[in-house]
Length: 102
Ligand SMILES: Cc1cc2nc3c(=O)[nH]c(=O)nc-3n(C[C@H](O)[C@H](O)[C@H](O)COP(=O)(O)OP(=O)(O)OC[C@H]3O[C@@H](n4cnc5c(N)ncnc54)[C@H](O)[C@@H]3O)c2cc1C
Image (cartoon, rainbow, N blue to C red; front, side, top):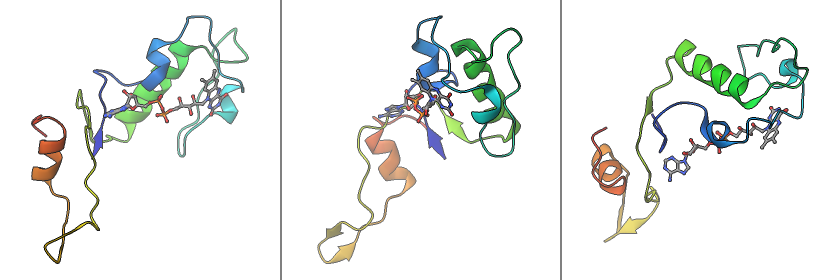
């Protein structure tokens, strides 16, 4: 499960200047399993191209992203309470995201 505070895929690239580009050509910026295609007319893809690629990647692999969900705290699964090892659970997760339905 992946939690993302934003409403749509693309991470920080959704909020950059239009003029911001990757530092490397598309072929060197791919995530495992799916090549980032070149952006016509741009050796270094722009933010819109990156957002498109990340959105497509998420769909292609059906990544289980829940949004918008802002994580407020991550319980330490090794934390001991009363001599017991505490495990994180869906209930813990809901509590630490402000009660969002997951
Ligand atoms: C100018 C520039 C050029 C780059 N060039 C290249 C390149 O050429 N090739 C390359 O491979 N990489 C490049 N990178 C790096 C690459 O783009 C980044 O590594 C990548 O975008 C970062 O992705 P990320 O998901 O780690 O972080 P982000 O894009 O910052 O996404 C983090 C996500 O976590 C969410 N989040 C944060 N806090 C919480 C919370 N408490 N609860 C829930 N969600 C939360 C945010 O809302 C966001 O959606 C470049 C980066 C920059 C800035």
